[in-house]
Length: 106
Image (cartoon, rainbow, N blue to C red; front, top):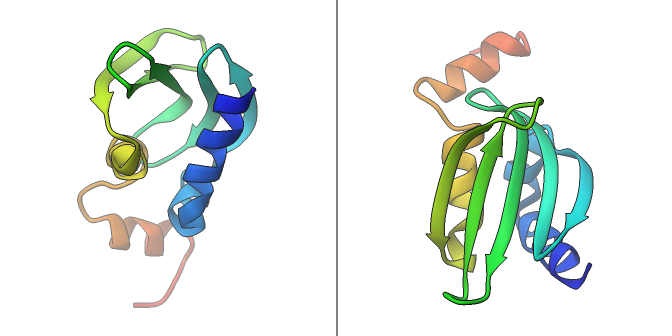
């Protein structure tokens, strides 16, 4: 539970990016945190797991049916937000896609 709360506090350090993923359903897992996302690139589940041996974090992207879509290992704590954002939300023409989805003017 400590690890999950710590990870959640790290992710919330940049609320604009964190909420842009459509983050919800937060669950403490062994050595980590699991939550659902609804991003432009990935819609499903993200797991962040602390790897005690390397003192780094691993990230799993899972489908809603828990099938592993991508595994990213060896992430430093200060890279977590950027790595998750690059794999969940940020894409080519990101600003245009946001404007289109939410009917925002140019």
